[in-house]
Length: 603
Image (cartoon, rainbow, N blue to C red):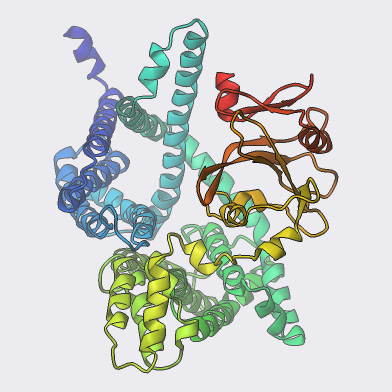
């Protein structure tokens, strides 16, 4: 008891214990929700909503805790965690039930994780200032310091947890080397992973906060690095804009990813300028020439934003909205707000260089915070807006049946896309109703998006024979063998089969029954130097009209181990031997045995 009192006697130890306890609760909540793994949609959504509440509130508490005022802080963070819980519930409840015919709602989980992380990052500096002062006044200098400090706090916290896991796995490996598997089994348990990671993450953040001078040093180093590279960024941006009138926009559009380039450039400008500006209280960081270069770059930001939005609009006009384009246009509009604000700050006379940036940064941080939530609500749901836009384009005649992407509706836009398909199926009076029904029938037989985007072309036996060399030469292959080779599960055998580098198929006897089997060696049309990687398969009849590869062994890397030419010759001469244990290995004469994954374990 005395030891506990001594442990709790110092504020630093109390803070470590508090943050570790919060991490423990986060780990327990994570493990509990993953353990429940309910298939009931409402219960599953409730569990993940509760998990989001615990994780978000816990993270806010860990970063904002200052050693005092824990009761007030606890009430605030528990309240701030409620929106994260509600939006998580909304996102998870939309996940399709097991066996659903549509896909795409799952991507909302990924984007919400990113948006929630961004929202927490924006909220934290305001919460930290409120925790310290107890008022709703937020000096920009403190906002700047906290926003950069939090980045390094998180990095050091996870670095601490990473070092912990490196030690744990080294320990488990050493003990396993002694023949004891219990430790490795323990550290591989989801409960152990979740709970200890939460605890170590909390302790790591507490330790990082105790060494504020390290955080300050890291922030200063980062600012110095950005400040030294900003002149190069100025040269890049201004050179690009200076050359653009002479080349025109065509080369930029020809890249097919002009929007991504411009968005990345704008984001770099935003990051570098804020790293140079810092809290706006320090002296001007550059001489006259570089300073005017930075100002010119900021004045040019609206031009870059205009080019970005124009580029996106061209794609949207041509192909309509997709979730990716919707997120991109929202991102571009936000950067447009920053661009206009920074351009205004560059031309406006102020006692502080670019002083108006502070006002725009604060205002736009709340805009970004609102959009992080709004884009995961029915108000601005990218999947919903994309499905509605594509439906409108079709019904208005801008897209005909042949060019309407039914596959995107089913495989990328979730239940909103499926609702559009259901409405299209009911358009009995539509002039293209028969074509719609045909496309929907074809779609119902498709299992994956890539099958819809790249339908497999069934080739005729005559066409396939141009890419096969049959042994013996006068042997006639059964007709049903051609269709079996083109079956979805066997189509890989045709990889590399070309007219110049044909595959080989050899008729022979490799078991005790009188029925012929076929050894199939795929071709080398995709190999530039020699044929060091190939597959040898044994095709056996499994029904009156179907064949199946009872053996399929990949020979990779070392041509000296079992060269393809030697394997082919052995098959033609009857010397190729497949192992008796489920055909998992193959050998020729005294050559080393080559096995697949299962053969290497069982032979």
